[in-house]
Length: 217
Ligand code: AP5
Image (cartoon, rainbow, N blue to C red):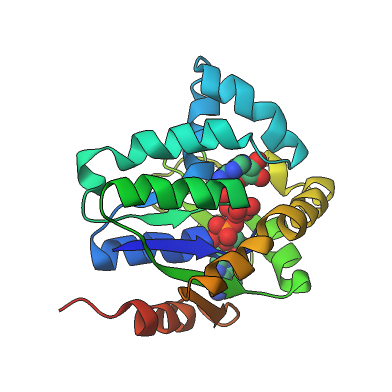
């Protein structure tokens, strides 16, 4: 089953995608995480190319992103489907995804659109903290760690993502509106779009998503 999680920055795509992946037992493919990993290792050409775009809150060019996802979909663990988080983000990426999946006799089955108002998005992003060691995601108010500034899972320090600074968040929201929102119509026309109320507890939202994709037996 191939699922796309769509929604603005901070809508909870990563949070929900990780849960769906565990429950449905299909891999979570986050293009943002892949890019951040490439930047983190400091050596990869992909990381060097992506870094400046991410810092400014702009999108990495379509060609780079499509090649990256194509490579990821070819891996063995993706054969039964994937949960895409952060891809596609433009019409060109959405068309490329259809072509890539079609080659394998697949298609996007569900597009889960998380709907969250701008005020809440801003609060979520400004309070988000990420573990430097294992990448776990927290929130200073909504999902705090037991010990301040320290990951519950591995004990490493928490950091704020560079693109969660206020001025970059404003740019990311604009980019979403301009370049990604048109995908709502794209997927509506293909009858796979499911708008979901993205406010409430993480569990409540997860239940809404499971009602659409179905609980595993
Ligand atoms: P990416 O990492 O994909 O960022 P994003 O789409 O902007 O999404 P976020 O990761 O900010 O938010 P999210 O929706 O996953 O929310 P989360 O679950 O963390 O991309 C980063 C950059 O990479 C892009 O700007 C671009 O430059 C580049 N890029 C990536 N993909 C690309 C592509 N396809 N094409 C081109 N460029 C690309 O939740 C946010 C916070 O809220 C957390 O603290 C969480 O704990 C909290 N939270 C979650 N759910 C709830 C809830 N229900 N209640 C309260 N708090 C909650």
